Image 1 (cartoon, rainbow, N blue to C red):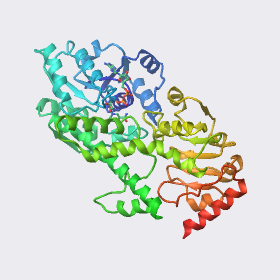
Image 2: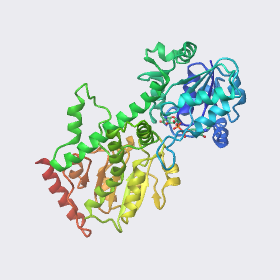
Image 3: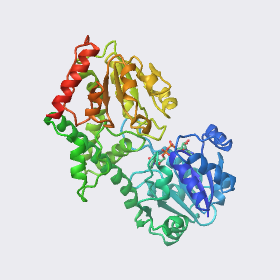
Image 4: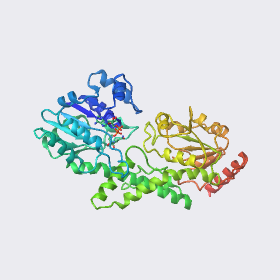
Length: 462
Ligand SMILES: NC(=O)c1ccc[n+]([C@@H]2O[C@H](COP(=O)([O-])OP(=O)(O)OC[C@H]3O[C@@H](n4cnc5c(N)ncnc54)[C@H](O)[C@@H]3O)[C@@H](O)[C@H]2O)c1
């Protein structure tokens, strides 16, 4: 089939490349000239494992190309995907749909013959109706069906997710559109990925409900983690214990600094706003959004608590900046609020991230960026693990301890074992599993820290 992807960001580029891999002829369009020029030169604008090879193979085989002008691709396409951004609208938290509606207005005068227009962007219930209205108003004669096909891929595992989805949700009641969508996803259908056909509005809501539910799971375990810290329980064992129940499941039960990224926070806000507009306030989700917002900044207090509440004159090393590993996406990353709070408390922040430092520099100031984890830890008074990149999971702990001025580690992803860290002489704080780290005086010596570490070890073994 001939496919146009409007919007060549994380979703558009990966979906376009995967559709090309399925054998379709795909043109990815974007209004960002520099991005398209780079892609034509073989440069990949985002960090996503496997994407470079996938693009090269499909461009090489002539199934995938890139353009800034939409006229030719739209005229020639059987299916046009809209995969543009839907960020939070400034000021009120509703989804900003201006890019989606712009795309609809651009498509309308150009479509020829039967064409399926698919909203892949995450959009509030009823957006498909408005896209259809825009197209019909401009082109009453057009043979167009507007379909909702929300995307569930995760950055960092996006190609795998696209090719092995848990389900493909298609929102349309039109038989011709159903056939076109079945055809476009045929290889996945052969792999038995369930295709769920629903009404357009239902499909739109499925996407938001899924993200909101996952966000709720995260906030739930984060609050349980806070309780664990007070009562001397271990949140990882609690998560394991409840996750073994099939009705609950083990995923999205990792306590941490709060969820971030390009989807959960803004989708949660948009769903809450939609519900308020329909006079059905979603109180649970309002609480999830509120607790998550305050949590990111509160993580800085885990660091200051070790130094009796003040970080003035201290150097804090932060490992990991992106909202999760294997991406360079910094949108709403917990590290942003964390670092700002550390700086507000008077700390000098050093940071290292394997892929996110380029984008981080656009949004964070006064941070010293380092070449690797050890460079980052050098002469630091505390080290914070903010993102669980694989390369941070097996650091040389003796080397780390020797490099640091003060052996304090705050592990916001629980990737180290408290006993092991205490053995190396670290004062170690995780999330929801160690007893609160004892506060130390600002003048505490290295030896003093080691003995505090010992007493913390004793306490945690009680
Ligand atoms: N990033 C994810 O992991 C993810 C996962 C599932 C769903 N989504 C949803 O998919 C949508 C896209 O997200 P993203 O992360 O890919 O966004 P993005 O910001 O990375 O990319 C959007 C692209 O669209 C382009 N664009 C905007 N208006 C355009 C127009 N009229 N014509 C051509 N190009 C235009 C922009 O230049 C940009 O390159 C959002 O609704 C998002 O919520 C994202």
